[in-house]
Image (cartoon, rainbow, N blue to C red; front, side, top):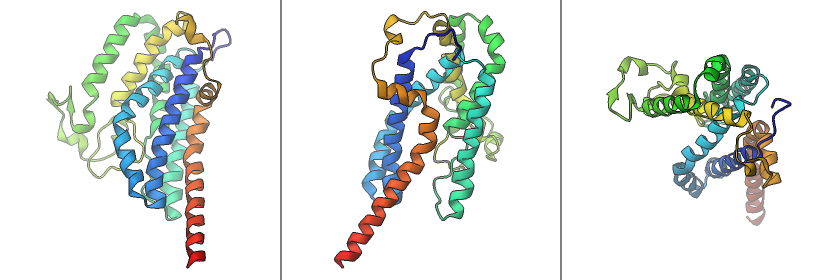
Length: 259
């Protein structure tokens, strides 16, 4: 954040809450994958209905913070690089170790990094655009492109050309076919517009015009997680995998001992 900007604690806390929710959600998936327990998959699938809410919280807050950053483009490059590292580990290194099915192509970090870079480059235009106009345009574009992954605009009202979906090279934009698989995937369409929505709202944050209670700290643990969300995201899967594989090893040892 810029040095003259007063920290809005509620943004850290909400981001920390969204990260915790994501970690809990992924834990159930990993329980099914590592321990082979179907109830882990079942709970994961049931919680998927809540995913868009946590995605929206995280992405909007990131958009707001783009107005508070010293250098949004530089920050975006760092986050995008972290996303590439995640892809390298999950899609190249892990399969060589016999761990498949967890490949990540253009996950949340890649998407956020790209959104930061694009928003940073567009910042002069964003600053000139009235907040109300920018918010309305962002909402319309988000609604228009939300169903891009299903081959349409405006939730099926307009069908997109099938040629866009013949390959997966345009997956970062939201155009992919049935062969595309990613354990974590956020396309630029529609999420770029959710990010831009936050960027326009961020003017109020930059001007110190948020309600007084948003600047007060309500939860130190959530604020800490929110401030270090990148590191929690990068570390949570290795940690969960490590714990679950350790539990699996203990169970096997106990079983062998009893036998």
